[in-house]
Structure formats: structure tokens, C-alpha cells
Image (cartoon, rainbow, N blue to C red; front, side):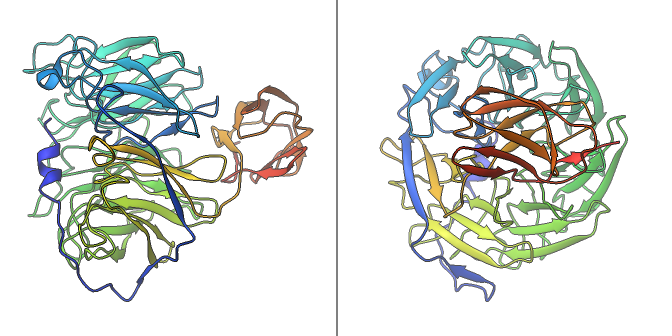
Length: 474
């Protein structure tokens, strides 16, 4: 397991005084452990956040478990489905020939299939244990290896993929490529891969997080290392769909943080938000804001008491706040935390994990359309092999559009709960024709005359609004 040794070194149990901008939450937040992994059903979920499927269930990966001989018999990892109530189904167990150790999460593409990566395994012999793969999987679990990396085109993909408006899936490899620092690539849903960019060091090295599309049509990401500074502390970058990369910011490793691991979050105010796993005023990591033009503001430095070493991505929930996790810190044993932070930097620790409910969360959270937050922990739980949990923070149900932008006439999926009996769908107040596919999915198209704004769905149980405004593109 190539990457976890460095993260394990981040584990810290020291407790410090809270900073003036951080608070401890009231007991209003309720954490529920939905499942403890035991090896037979998977083990050690990694960096990838869960993803909500069009069927209302959640999908994800584990680094090990379910047999097939890797890691001295511990298993090569799995792809799983879990219901909101906690019933888990193992959809696929990797056997190294089709990939091994999926660190990143999944993305459900417009065709309904899921796509992901494994950090090793595959057909190539250029790497000792295989250079990793890209795979597709049907919702029923039929997996196809689309590409095996061969070092020249990159190796060790650790991040989830993202689908752009062209239909291509974009991702990164942590290592290899032309300069040994990793790559940016795109791959068609059918499996044709193109290396778009090779990192060289001063422009960043070792991209670990998924790319995210912003409102300007470009993709944004981070590298864990590299940059123009002397500390080799990582970067934030922008890349066009034509392959032109711009380094927006190089971390200095001090008060501005260093070693970003989690994916950026695009907030409703247009800015990007992320975390660094190190640096900051207490060397325990930071939360930062960065504009699309590259102006960075450090919003919070972790100090141990309210968490340390945030490795996962942030998510903006329907209350406008950002939510995330820290790998360690919090409480007396330092098993990690779940936190909320406002866009201006006020941080609240919502949960301090105690190992029985999970430990060492690597991945970020997602908000399900029922309103609750969902996440995973790398370890802890009944069998010390990780957990899946939900966290209620008092937020109500909503609908999610996929994608959340498009031209007039473009197809759009709407995800939600209890959508049966829907009587109206509108884009910024303009009614749209729609089809109810199931209780969790509606299909529609952007209506003529629609403008950027909230999508509303009227059901017999009330009106549901989209979690982010839908952007109508010219």
C-alpha cells in the first residue's frame, strides 16, 4: 500500500487549546454507524467519497478485503453498494488482473455506469505490481477494465474521475508519465485514453485529488508535492480541456499550509475551497479559499483539539456551509473528527470519533438528497477495518441535478427521494417536461426560456429545491 505510510505518520494524539475561531458543537448532530467492514465485505475505505446513485443507494470502494489474494490474502479491494439504511452489497472483488487497491471513489456517468480507478494491478508489467487501471461497472456489478497504465502514460491513479460536457472522463495519475511526477488524462466511456499533461515538478508533482469543473469551463485540481517553492509542498492548478495548465498557487508549507490531498470544492459564490494535510500555524493542516484567478486565503489552521491533518475533500451542504473530516485529532485519543466551517472561516467540530464509531477518516463527506451527510472511516469500528456512517445535522431533503449546467434542450437527470407523484419541474421558474423514472430519479430537458437559477420539483409531500443553482449555458 504505497501511500498510506505517509498518512499514518500524520496520526497525532496531542490536544491543544482551541483557536478563537473554532467551537465545539452542541449534541444536536447525530452520528449513526451504518456498517463496520470485516474483510469479507471489504476493508479500509480510502480517499474516495461515496457517491449517490440514481437508484438512491450509495456506491464506493474499499482498498482491501473480499479475498482474491492480494496483501497476503487480505484481498485486492472491492466496489460496494449500500442503502441509506445500511444494507451493503459487494458488487465486485478485484483480483489484481483487473486492478487492485482502489483508492479513489466512483463517478456515475451520463450512461448510468460507474467509473473508477485502481492504484495498482492491471495488464502492464512496467510496474512491479501493475501500474493501475481505469474501469467501468454497471449498477449491477459487471466490471470492465478499460485501460491498464504502462508507466509511460502514468501510473498509480489514486483519484476519482470526473465527466465533462464532452462526455469524456478526466483523471490523474500520481506517478510516472514523461517526467515521473504524474499526469492528467482523459478517457472516453469506451476506453480510449489520452495523456493530456505531464507534470514536471515546478508546475506540481503527484496529483492525488480528483479534478473539479468550475463555472468557467476549466478543470481545477491540486498536487501533493512540487511547485516553485523550496519546500516541495504542492500546488493548486487550472487546466483547460485543451490541455493548457496554469499553476495558480504554490504552497509554502508554513501558515498557508502544505501537501493538499483532498479535491477542491466549488462553492456557490464561485470560489474554490480545499484543505492541506500539513502546514498552517500549528503544522496540522488548513482550510483555504482560492479564487479562480489564484488568490488564496487561509481560513483556518487546525490545532489538534478540533482535528488535525484533513485529507478528504470538502462538501458544501444546502445550508451553505462546508463540511469535512480530519484524519486525526479531536477528543483524548485523536481518532479524527467531522467538522463544519463557514465560507468566512468559523470552524465547529461536530463529532470527535472514538474508534468504536470509526477512526482515521481519509475521505470527505457527501450530502445525500435526504439531507443527511454520509462518509467513511479508514479504520475503527467493530472489526477495526473501517466504517460507513451517516450524520444528521438537521438539514432537509433536496434534489440534485446531473449535470448542474447545460444548454436549452440538454438532457438532465434529477435525483431525489419520494419523487413518485411529482406534478411539476421548473428551471428558474420555467416549467419543463419530465418523466418519472423511479422514486429517486426524474429525467427532463432544459426548457426554452430558462435562466440560471434554482430547479424546483413539486411532489405530493412538498416542494424540493436543487442544492445548487442550475447554470443555463448559451
